[in-house]
Image 1 (cartoon, rainbow, N blue to C red):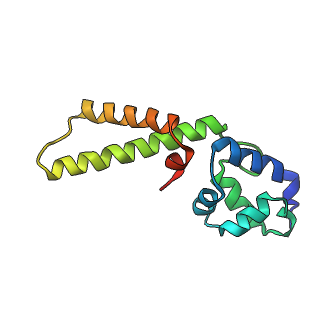
Image 2 (spheres, rainbow, N blue to C red):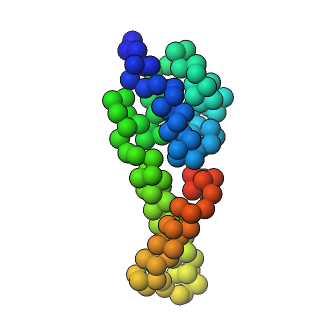
Image 3 (cartoon, rainbow, N blue to C red):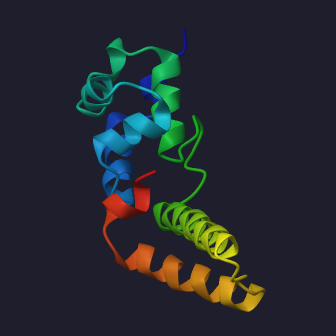
Amino acid sequence: MPNISSAISVESLSWRRRALGMSHAVVAARSGVAEPTVKRILGGQMAAASFGTVVAIAEALGVSLGAIEVDPEELRRRQARRKAEQIARLVQGTSALEGQAVDPESFNRLVERSYHELLAGSNRRLWSE
């Protein structure tokens, strides 16, 4: 079995979680790993963890086994964009049900406004599903 700690350190994963503003619960939800296990691993008990569990947590934090794939701010921007588009689609769908179509320009403005609000707002709102 490969030595996980040589490729990914607890410190780097913990730093990454804090830099992204993710709670342990969000990491657990994104990785599919139980929150107590996430806390144990990020608390320094990585050696007892399975390889797959550490990889799932690392991927939830945007980290590969070799190096950081995306810097924390870029990952936050991607999440904000994804969520802003999701919000705009919900508004668009509701408007369509009411017989008031949202034109593409209004849709794009809504996405941009939501994107900036998500980046400026709480991390909890940014990472919630």
